[in-house]
Length: 285
Image (cartoon, rainbow, N blue to C red; front, side, top):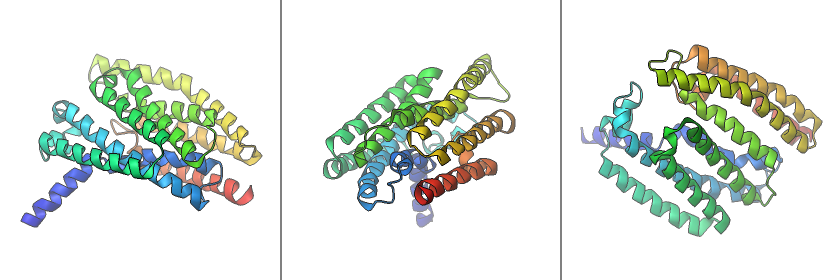
């Protein structure tokens, strides 16, 4: 019985850090991946501490966000199962975990990272504190703040490998992240006027941003000076179409990142894209 309780407690603390969202922090590797240097051990070795630091920082802000939202989450049909909303973890325990992770992050950053990356991580945490306390209440600020987190990771990735920042990549990821972040505002069956309004705003934003995302991506892969990579624009378009279709016609509510783990067609498109890029970046070029 005691062992079972310990296992359940550990499981609840792990869920509190949202392990599925680790995929966000993988974005620090994107600069090295696209520039064909991720297989160079020295550069990869520089990226791993950056990834770990952003992962710890993201765990801190997820816990903080759940503390802010625990009362609202308790009334939500899906979010009510979250550890804090369901009462499996107390606010006091969550705060102790934040303190522990903050000390761990501080020591790790001092020992393993350069000052410029530490500044980016600090800015990431401050940005997310503002997000949890205010920005997420405004649909546009919500999406922009989430997208800014990806920009910080991308820039940190460039700093880690010592490359100049490619602003086409930064803008592309920023716009793509806005599309993904806005997904949580979609309701196939709006229950309130606010839901209907937010869904309409997202539809209009998708109409505007989708072609821009494709154009900026085309400019980015063109800057890599490989004609083969331009073909990947087709896969990006297919992926965007599938993502939007899933949201509006096959899904009532899910975290946009859960779609990557739930939708087989989306997984197939992403896997095809990764294989295509690996082949032409690392084998052909």
